[in-house]
Length: 216
Image 1 (cartoon, rainbow, N blue to C red):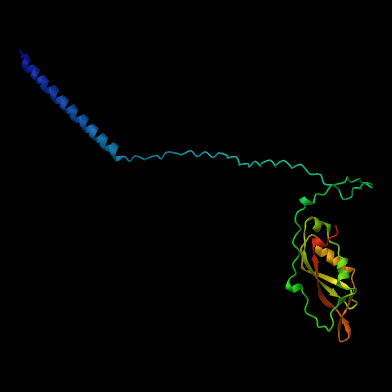
Image 2: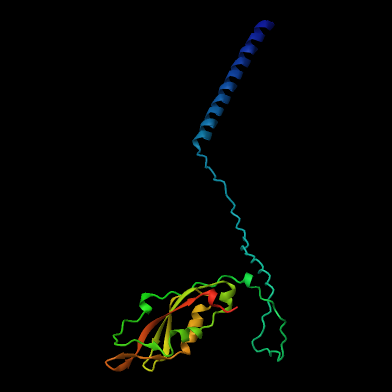
């Protein structure tokens, strides 16, 4: 029996096409089912692991600064050191022009002045005031510094007529107050009298220091 090749080719083509279609549908079905199954399974997320490494940190050590160098010691003379028996001191010329001015005399406050004591007869210098004034030595430093003026010394004359306490009421410095006090220590008074009885009494002794009275 004779077969037409064209008809036979069409039949084969149709069969091949149907076979390809069936295979294509089968593949799509398999892929669809496989993809659906793949989506249905939950995926567990695995958290990344952190590796914590603990290292030993060395302790901080504070380095102390070195102490400052010690200062050189200044030698001090010992009090127990034996002194030389014979010491020769050279003559030193004193220039009075370079002597600083004397310090001001001490001031007497009102609290230092004792209360008034009643009397009938105040103390008097035995031999008179002029005799006492001649016993006062004008300080050499006051002469060189040309210091002059009035000095008033307040002295307490006891019952025996002896000065026992002294206060500077007014001074001029340069040792003039000390000169008056030194003269008063050598002076004797008649004591103050109260109802025919000797009593202690404070008396002011003024002294004028004048350069014109100095003997040249």
